[in-house]
Length: 354
Image 1 (cartoon, rainbow, N blue to C red):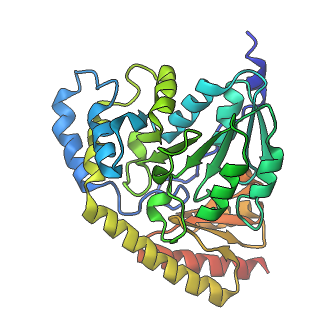
Image 2 (cartoon, rainbow, N blue to C red):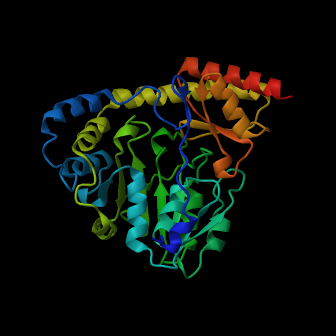
């Protein structure tokens, strides 16, 4: 059998790697674990697993509507935000259509575009940030989708409100903009353009979110998209009948209400950033100030070698060669002890590499 021609260029996703016994700080997971309220909700659902889940994730969509102050019809739930990204491409891409994104960003945009026969154009980041001028220039009559991670993975940088507004105004009406806000709950910047404030006035914006990061539910695979109801109605045509399992739906509803856990996570991230900034500055190491729960750090040496060294010391970080950033690493901000151990290993690694 011969696979579809478009799949010949599709590469398997490369997740953050670890080994048994190592402290895993390579995948931007929550170091505090899952939301306690979500765990309680899961326990209460265990006796109902012989029943199919709600195919429309009604309770979750209702909870999201309350959380964001938007109509329920603005939401669609998915098996992780990855599925939402694929559903968007499946809804709008015809063979030969084009997708635009950055080189140094989340690989699922490339995957989703190629999966449905699209051609993916990538422009380099500029000083670690999405280059709005280059994005505009890459758009043409064949462009259907523009993917922007805001904040960006792996750099933690962001487009501000003015930059995004100018980009949206400059784009032709046939281009849909997907804002991936997987890390937006960690944002502290006052000029960050939260997508939920934009979708009702702009039918060309789709926003995606995940429960994997701040809510600590990566293992359940639960995410969602938000857009104008007309857009959501179109995307729903690609949805599998029971795409989100019963446990994930209940956990998502509960996690949204777990303010204590959310605040603990944000405080841990804030203190971790302060400590890591201070230590890296003292070491003279360049990094991108982050609006996410990770740091993108320039080591000046091969990132795979740094990864191997860390793993030998019992900690897994992310080498960024797969993002075409061969001398950079990404570190998930951890607990106080984990952050101190990270700095110790990094100092030792760089010293021994001289």
